[in-house]
Image 1: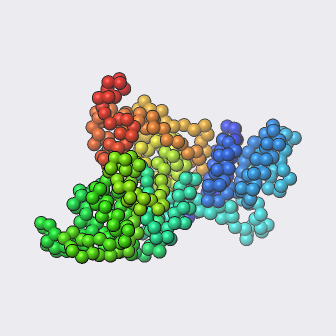
Image 2: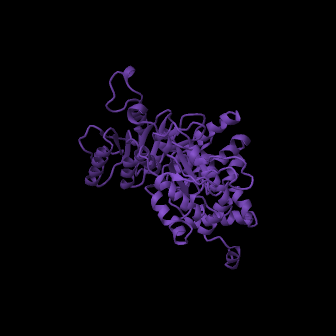
Image 3: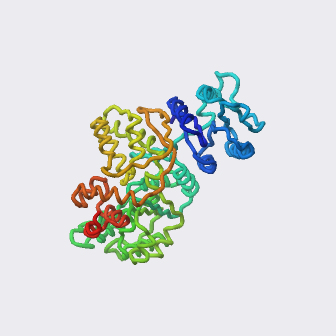
Length: 478
């Protein structure tokens, strides 16, 4: 995968933002912006590699500026720091060799020069490493899985998740993954399996919400001939089929308490009984559980066993929704487009800056699942106007940030990228759901289909947003 040259811009105004916008069209260049010093520190600390170039504007408070530059120099030891000012006399920086000043007029020229001549690079161009390889490793971090699918991390939150996964994956302990429907919990589970010593053995998934209690029990534990009507021969369950490997129990919160007790027994000593069997079987299976429910509330409501929760919760990971890691959208678009184009045997398609801006500002209530289906529609229809319409929620303002920077990414398309994460706004989410329900005349199944969500998950989302009753909204005049 092609690597990127990483630039961090700290507290720059619109004029410099425009210069960076033009610079970001250079190949393999990623530009991140921070409005405040602490935000810049956070980006440096959470990125897989520090930036190769830091750009900031001169400050009237020389002492404060010097302290900030010193701190950034320590965090990003290989970075060159450019202090931008048209009045050199106002620029007061440290004597460090990696800090220098530049005028606005020459900023773009200096950026290009720094990209082509990284600090500490050998003098001979022929033997110099590429700027991207010299200053950055693979960004984003992507792992492709056998059989399809990939795990992508290109935001501080997901970099943190992948670092933790790399630490715990080799250790044979249960893992609990939480997050909204469609955020990619299955891909996280696959990454745990991929990084573990079990990677040469099976990885299997069982959706606990898709089967009623009796069928789910036989699916997991198997049955003997004659165990029930129609059981003419014995059949092993997923635990036996997955012996030595990893079993993902998706939507575990939908499992009945009685079956939870049997699962707890397997977690404790690795033994279970097939339906209709008097003997016990022993397996060696790593359990990964995923759920989108509020487990604390489920425990209070006696819908989830507390002892099972503590047995599973050795390590837990919360996967943030796509709206909280929007800087990953351009990369997801690139890789999903490539996968779908291969599957449908069509050419990849470009994303204009205006369309990508719409994609960045849309809240994606169905998360990555909804995003992938949007990409599929756009790739097949190739109608940008229709795609723009799909991203408009009538009467609902899109989320906006003060500065948007558009880096050019390698691959089949050009994308726009934004570097700020957006906090969850439950009020905005409720408004979007209400508008969607109004358009479907409160047909909740149709609304769930439009969001590419399971009906049960959609009802849960409605309840969390206080939209579980049409009559109460109607009485409120909403």
